Length: 201
Image (tube, rainbow, N blue to C red; front, side):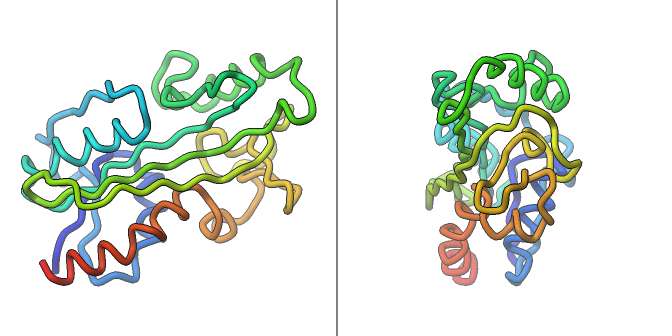
């Protein structure tokens, strides 16, 4: 069974990937089985650049197919922030509470259309030599509410309202999020490519 590695140790991202790709006859894993995998510095300054760095640097070292994925929240009224720095917006990587608090402060005086935002996910698939086979991008549009709502999801999900549901990703069931999220849209594009490439590999 071919192995496909998510170039991350983020268990929440891995769970989403397993939900999105779990029907494939693949050995799906994150970097946990590879404690010596080199850290990849996310220095590209763009989502696709960071995702490409993860995929192309890890694949030849692990000698495996690797998905590099980078994602974040963009608020046009804030010049695109938090953007590529979404995970360390408030200064500490992965501190969701601090990141959400900072976003609320930055948007305190914004109203109406100024509160529009979108999640973006860019995924890059590299073969075991490090060659890029595919690059995909998914976006999900919503509105930033003025207080945390719900306890589901992660990152900025409790602030990210989906207008057609009137609920945040923190409130919506996981299966609803998985049907429409930025990562779901990116992986849906990646799915037939993975089936084609790894089935033949």
